Image (cartoon, rainbow, N blue to C red; front, side, top):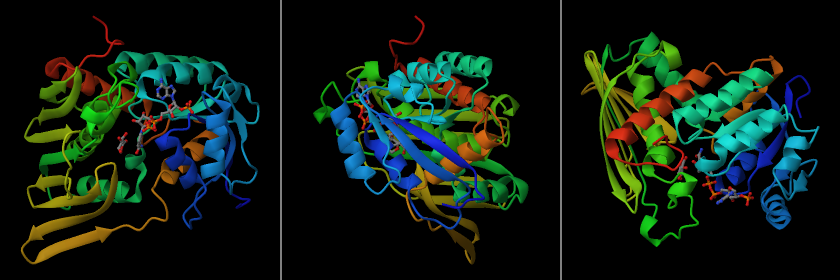
Length: 352
Ligand SMILES: NC(=O)C1=CN([C@@H]2O[C@H](COP(=O)(O)OP(=O)(O)OC[C@H]3O[C@@H](n4cnc5c(N)ncnc54)[C@H](OP(=O)(O)O)[C@@H]3O)[C@@H](O)[C@H]2O)C=CC1
Ligand SMILES: O=C1OC[C@@H](O)[C@H](O)[C@H]1O
């Protein structure tokens, strides 16, 4: 452990897929690390699941985390600084509120909440309690993403951005899933838009607009969704800004392709490759003989970059992060609320 780096102590809520990816990444050895991460506690709906999770994913952790058969015990643990929430979308609001009530800082998975009203409630509670809260939109923290945005907006490498096309498609075999699946059950927040469309939307917003949150321009939106058994399996939205447009798509019915995003400007274009949530490279095209590819290596999946940001913010006494501030989470959710209003996907949590 690097002594001069800030150290944060994590409590992990839930033992599903994303929690396993997140904890494994926190343990990855890497040269660019900016903080030390200690996983102090794991909370699960059952002690046995928690034990299996730690045996499978954290057997090399030092110290071995304490395992709790409830989330409440993690919120109560004085050795935990920050709670990571990896539950289905429908529980994020309550998990966040519970952690905040106990004075814990929070990193909560995307989509942060079901809708923008829920997010505002969480941020209000965080403001009152003075704790740090951030939506875990890990993609925004990739060095690739930061480099691309600098080239695009500060260096204007393709001139003025005119159009952005971004897609996230993966065949989630929805028809074969049971109602207990978070990808199938509307009561758990299922649907293409909140699960994967949020990434396509994020790329479009970042590439079409330099502002975040309240500083961002509000585009006009035209949207459609395909619903199967009440959940959206395909969502498409047009974002209209003065002089520029975004085309944002996602589907849980088909396998997508890389490059997943194309940005067109007055002096060239850029294609981004990899997975929409987890980009690997981008290429700038300025003419037939003028292309430049930027490739980015990483030792794990890339969750450590958002975790480092959380650690540095908490150490600095901040309650919000500059890359993913509260108003940006609310902006993205407001746009998704509008896409669902036009497209038809509803959740029990939405006002009538
Ligand atoms: N950033 C990324 O790349 C990814 C992000 N995600 C996000 O992570 C979150 C969780 O997704 P994922 O890990 O795939 O989900 P999983 O279904 O794999 O795991 C969810 C976990 O939440 C807990 N849970 C509590 N109540 C319920 C309930 N009623 N039904 C199901 N699970 C419950 C369970 O843990 P326990 O029993 O231990 O309490 C369960 O294992 C979502 O917000 C999703 O969007 C998901 C995948 C990738
Ligand atoms: O965030 C995500 O990205 C990758 C997908 O596998 C997953 O369903 C989604 O939650």
